[in-house]
Length: 388
Ligand code: HEM
Image (spheres, helix red, strand yellow):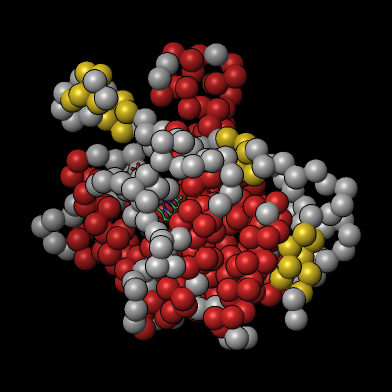
């Protein structure tokens, strides 16, 4: 079951379906659907900005909770067709579970190589926690699906979402001679994979971006100057992407210097092959080390320095170096790349357009991360001051 861990026919069918769902929901370059998705994202960004701008005190605030709620709720709308109040008990619990789950999956990583480790208490405890979390999350999803079906049966209006599309496809397939893998258990895994893969990665990238903006205030200023000169007071929108190459370059540089999926997702070889002179037999597990590529001095001069300039081509446009692979490459590469880029651009652009970011005086900035399945910044506080 699932999508991220699936193979063969199941994976091909479910991946194709996921991509078509996201396109239908607006993951496109232009058009009315794209505009509707943009409006959804802007709703979440504006909520974040207004919540963050309240925090201009000398102590500052960790933007994590606000961003987790706003971005998570945006993905709730896209994936489940539902949103929650920030203090909703179920939503608070789901957020907590995700935060802990992401750390624990990192601890459980060595089990991929040595399954016997699951017998050790440290690993068996984590394993049980993950299984229990999955079971409880699926209970919540079942309830959301039931609510959706009730609304449909009562002729009530529902939000466009991945959940609604999967449910429709399931009904359609049930009456055809090709049911495929559109089953109730796959439904739950599919929703979990899309929500999980999208929220944690995008949230971690935005948190790294804000932290680097404070660590490199001259870069923050340069982006704001670009925003002011190009937009002249108009709010950032997706149509401005090509006119704001420095903002795009700073996002790319954040994704390079802090790969949020530093160890990549393990893959398997489908035939015997030779990599850099090493014979790798068919059926081996291959782990693509993104961190090693993004920090390799062969491809990047001064790799430990935050330099958005390296993504600016000679003609001033955004450069696309070959060794830049935050979404990986090939058949299994991230299927949500375009949606992620829309969210990253609108969140970072609108936050910097409206707010100045500084660090409280008593805080020593720490740019090292914590590694679970994703690499996230350690907790930090920022002071957000309105620019108007
Ligand atoms: C900054 C944000 C994101 C980053 C850095 C990121 C990165 C990645 C990476 C490195 C992979 C593994 C690719 C491979 O194994 O070759 C992946 C897979 C995946 N991503 Fe993303 N991702 C992001 C956002 C999203 C979003 C917004 C969605 C969906 C809405 C998404 C859905 C997926 C799915 C479903 C897969 C599995 C694809 C497959 O196995 O065929 N991701 N992502």
